[in-house]
Length: 251
Picture 1 (cartoon, one colour):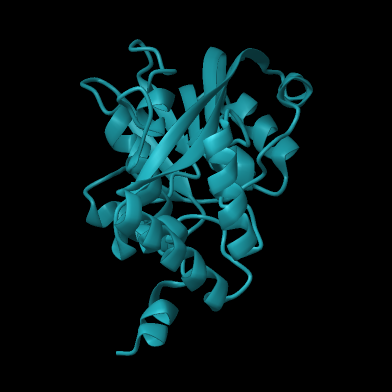
Picture 2 (cartoon, helix red, strand yellow; picture 1 turned 30 degrees about the vertical axis):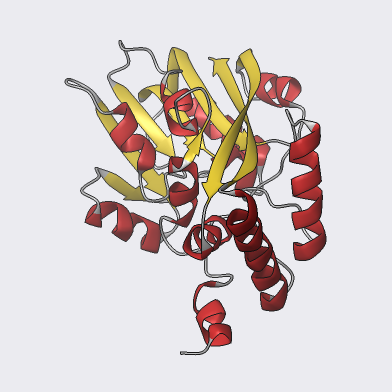
């Protein structure tokens, strides 16, 4: 198989589990974004909904004796992957039209769902509806900050090669307080943290870009991969920044 055909094999196919692969390898303060999100859920929560769960990464992080964690996603392929990884129970459904009764959950979490669902007001309204009074909604979204000068130089170079900013899928910045209030939720926290994915070789670079927003062409993605590989060969593993934002709200 030629190098070009190899690039075609993985480019632009954000296959099931691709985003989880990136976030599971992103570290900051000795924990991944998934662990950061999981810490938002009280130990007393016995029913938890993982909204837009993908392959179910948060189901593992939230599991504990006496707790039920249900994963919901609109992608059948992602749910099949979650089943293969031994995760469940799982529900095929849309985050903006939740197939659950009012006041069903002690907590709702979402790792990127709030950033990728087109109708965010509808999603938040549904989250509020299925949460019990006093319940917690916790969500992660990609962010543009924090970043230092070194981070900005690297991201600027990659953005030039890709013609897009190398971020996880979804809207990076939006005003959360008013959107939450409109849905009957009160913002309790809005924090940001910086994570890094270490890229040491071609496989690592391909895995990174497979989980990010796609470039404009296959050739641009290959150029970005080649750039990171060359940097790694010259100076050692490259630390690619992935700033994240955590929102927590109470019903």
